[in-house]
Length: 157
Image: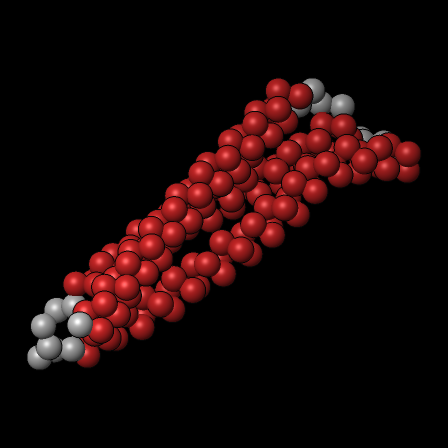
């Protein structure tokens, strides 16, 4: 039978506070990532409607290239979301293992360390995919700006 005192429970909760702060940051990051994904999906729907609405018109390579870049960005964001969610899950398991180990007296130190390292590695991977998505988005913006300049110059001539 587990015999916990109020002081023991408060000590366990104190141990769990640091991972909870990390979990809060991961939740905020997930919010940013899902917002970016929603914007990518909205833009890709607009481009698909434009491309499918031009049945008799010649294909528009600029729209097709942008749509391809949006698909690439969505895959990168999906990977970042998956890794962030994995990080959140692992941190929740860290909190549960901290509480369980301290409450029951089980030696879960190695498990807790492995879960925490796994969570941090997932977070690092998520940031890497997020950074790659930003690079692709910036490349798209640069390409569109150059294309816009060419159109302005051709209209002036």
